[in-house]
Image (cartoon, rainbow, N blue to C red; front, side):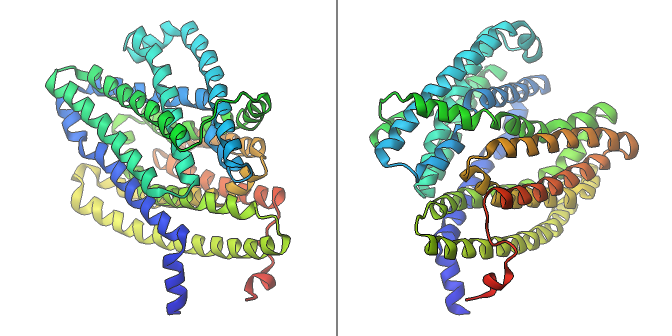
Length: 433
C-alpha cells in the first residue's frame, strides 16, 4: 500500500496536476483580489463596459483562434520537432487568414458593435488585435503543456495576469482613465505577451518559416468543425444568467451567479488536471508497439475510473464546505445561493469527467462529431433553461445546467468508445494484474 501511494504521488501526471492547480489558483486569485479596487474606481456602467468588451474579445477568439491548440496537441507527438515548428508556423498563417475574415465582418457591423459596446471604433477594431494576440499566447502555452513543463506554463500565465492588472491599475488610479485604462491594460498586456510568445517559440525551435499548404488545410479541416463546439461552451457559460435576469430579475440572477461561482472550485481542479493528463494520453496512444499499447490502455482505463470516483468524492466534500463559506463569509442577502451549490459543483464535476473522454475523440481527429454533440447539448440547455425558469423560477436554470452536463458527459463517453476502442467494460482484463 505504501509503495502504491508513493508511486501515485510521484507519478508525473499527479505531480504536474498539483503544479497546474497551484498556478491556476494563483492566476485566478489575482484578478479576484483586485476586484474591490476596480469597483471602487469604476462606476457600475464603466465596469459593465469592461465586462461586455471581454465578452466581445472571447467571441472574436472563437473565430480567429478556431481552437488551433487542439490540432497542435494531436499532432505534437506524431511529428519530428522540425516538422512541429513548421506546423506551428502554418497554424499561425491559418489564424492570419481567419483574422482577415473576422476584420471584414467587424468592419461591416462596426455600427452595431459600437452601439452594444459603447467604446468607440478604435476599441472595436483593436479588439481584433487583442484576440489575435491571445491566440498566439495560447499556442506558446500549449507547447509548454505538451512538453510537460507546468512551471513555465503557470509562471507565464501568472506574470501576464500581473502585467495586465498592474498596467490597468496604473492607468485607472494613476491617470484616472476609468474603463479606458482597463481596456488598454488588457490590450497592452496581450500584445506584449504575444510578441514574447513568438520570441520564445523561435528560440526553443518551435517556429520555422516554411509554408506548407497541407498543414494549413489540415488545420482548417480539423478546427472549423470545432467552432460550433466552442460557441456552445461560450453560450453555456452565460445563457442561464441572461435568461434569469430577463424573466425573473437582476437580483435573482446575482444570487444564482454567486452560487454557481463556487463551481470554479471543481472547474479549476479538473482543468488543471486535464492540462497535465491530455499530453500523457496523446503520448501513450501514439505508441506503435501493439502489446505495449494494449497494456497502457488498460492502465488508462483503470486510472480514469479511479479519477471519477475521487472527483465525485471531492465534489461532495466541496459542496459541504461551500455551504459553510456561504453561511459564514457571504452577506446574509446571499444566503439563498446555497440552494444552487450542489447543482453547480456536480455540473462542473461531470464536465471534468467529459474532459477525460474527449481526448480520445481529439486524438482520432473526430472533432466534428464532438462539435455536433456539444452544440446540440448547448442548444438543449438554453431551451430547457428558458422553459424551466418560466415554470419554477431560477432553480430551473440549475436543474437544466446539471441535467445537460450529465447528458453531455454520457453521450461523449459513448462517442469516445465508438471512435477509439478502449477496454472500458472488459473488467476481467482490467482486474488482472
